[in-house]
Length: 400
Ligand SMILES: Nc1ncnc2c1ncn2[C@@H]1O[C@H](COP(=O)(O)OP(=O)(O)O)[C@@H](O)[C@H]1O
Ligand SMILES: CC(=O)OP(=O)(O)O
Ligand SMILES: [Mg+2]
Image (cartoon, rainbow, N blue to C red; front, side, top):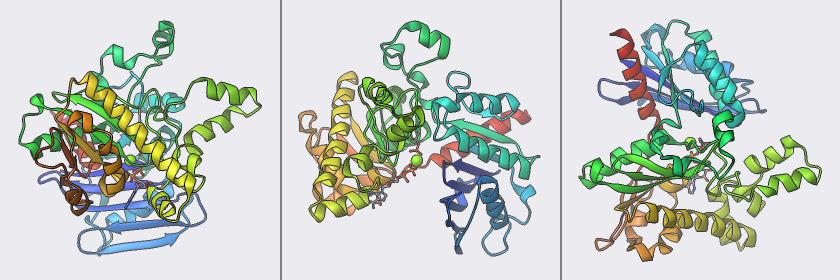
């Protein structure tokens, strides 16, 4: 079975084709800056690489371009699009309406639309990707894989807010958690790397990308995670504030900012970008720190301190932990962030091997010293593979 995985972000479209017989990637690519003046495509199929800068107005146009590449004699992996057996889409969430992966039909589409208010940066582009794929490949089964599913095991004491209970009953306002496919992949791979049964393992998974979240996982089940009703809660992120006193947006509204302005401030103009005033990208922040930029240093300090604070609280609710795993853009590529976070965690017996922290950067592996009580690891995440596995299962069950 050959599966096309689509991850539509607000301005990007990531895709992979995976051969599920051996879980090998046949091709992958990324369309960036969709809707801006100059978009770009980066594509590779194992033998040839293709890059192009051009203007791509919307996700449908992007997907059309991708479809052409999929059947290109040099860059593709198919003779015809009819060789695609199924499409798996990353979908942020549908609240409590869909809690596990599902074959996409009109009900699912309506639910994704309905829940856009709780996933303003993600649900609309997810939907655009689905509609574009349906239009271009109407006969191929399409599956939605939700960022929330892996967090469904959280108990009510972890997922309820301290708000009047009726808001949970009426609006399903609760904590959902995101990056679930990544945290799940990390859990499976960490157990493999440690040679341990997942059921025996207590771990903290740190997905530090542009969006960032932590998950506390006990025996393969999430007991808590840092994102909430939307991916705004928790850690300080590239452009998102993470936890703030709920009075802050109220205050800004009373100051005369519009609802959309406040939304934009919290979701895009805050976090590392907001504090530093220069960039949401950790590479730029660390470069600026070396040049003596004080607010870049401040952004780095707030970012890493918040991660350590959350890990401390998760260590408590897990009653100790065996492993800490760093993943995603920052987690996989940034020794400085890992070191600074781990330096806070001495109380739990975390001891980093500074040499391995650097030599295994990007590659992945165990980066703690042999006498560390907690095994610290870097693992490259693979959300696409998790999406493809679920898609395969749903489509196969459908045929039975
Ligand atoms: N070499 C690097 N060093 C430090 N940070 C990096 C590096 N490469 C990427 N990043 C960080 O990773 C982020 C992107 O992470 P990624 O997981 O791809 O996020 P997303 O899926 O949200 O686009 C960038 O914004 C940047 O902060
Ligand atoms: C849920 C979320 O924040 O996703 P991303 O990091 O891809 O923006
Ligand atoms: Mg991501």
